[in-house]
Image (cartoon, rainbow, N blue to C red; front, side):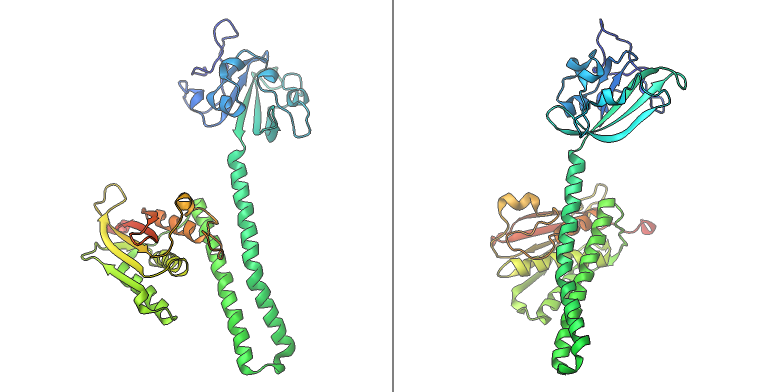
Length: 377
């Protein structure tokens, strides 16, 4: 079996293509199609394969690397500045070694790369016939690590305030219960209750993010009256003191029967309407209309548009609205709500967009397929 593709040793050099260990019958596999960098050196330490990903990661053209000694084509150092190939001695080292586990190494210029290697032998304890090296760019991992670090820092900050309040009020009540009037006790306990709700919401957000990121967000579809669901949210705001005239609900009939997870759709509506109330101005308009389905194979769907008359979202921020920690011009909150909204809508097979409303404010529009459960399909 030979390594196919353009990134192999040309004629005139050691043109024997080194077999790459792999499962299955993939004799025609082009190494340039692999997502990770692949470098193969023969028994003499000369590079016989240097795929496109390796060229991209190292910034060394494949043609310049082929036929070169491995340590020259791929000069690597460990984090202490030691030359890795001299340190590991793949051809003259211990005969029982078969691989090098993945580790962070440095390319010329100090760029980090994840490297693992396998030593191929014809027989146990025999000489190394070829060295197969895998390269992976660390940038994606760094972005993930930075995102996780930001999430931890945000959560720690958001938890500190309510927990400090809960601890302070409960400690005060326990130590000086008799000194406070019933009204003072009630006020303290109501504050503790509100802060406990805040912590509960934050934990729920973290669980949602975990499920979204891992693709495990479950959708339990039931019939949903989306117009009635929006009405409930509006009534709750009016009961809390918002003027009824601030909301305008328009439902275009007839709507197709919608099957969705009612709790998660409530979460989406709550977040979008709350954003319009808190960050927007003027009338909050919610339009519920039939639309084309965002999913192939289905004709109909339902769209919900939430808009306001405030300053809107700056054009340069539009592409960041649904990312983690985006808070817009006003601080407050975790900045995770719209990220979760997008995850919930997409878990339903839907789409969500943001733009500028006709009145100049922000406009969020999500569209869901009507999708019945599998047992009714």
